[in-house]
Length: 187
Image: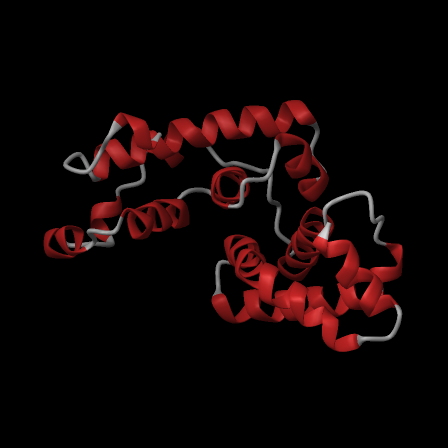
């Protein structure tokens, strides 16, 4: 495992080896923090603080697990603490699905968004943050249910239920707001 080598290098005093972790995990850390903080400036602050915490506490990292799971848990906790967010409280789920994205994008802008990734990112940003985070962790970052449980502190059943609901909400938003782009295999 490549991560193990870098962890050992950092722990033995080679502080520049920590750049490996920054380069490999910064993008997803920003994604997680931004979904919770809902603002890029705060997300960047959270990620910076999370890297400092990870560096200072690297000696507590168990080498038998994935660094990414351990680190994303730090990012998640730091972001929730920073925003004092109630991540798992979803207000009136039925109304949440009725979000209309057309108010954010005019017809011309919809047609200009020919990149699927941009559309997915836009839809995720309009979902309740807990659902957007679940889909990002599972599909965009390829974390397993078990890893998401470790990152979020939720139990296995809660993660599965939230993923199920998030998929349904995502599908509803895509089909309603981008019918010309909807393809069953995307969902």
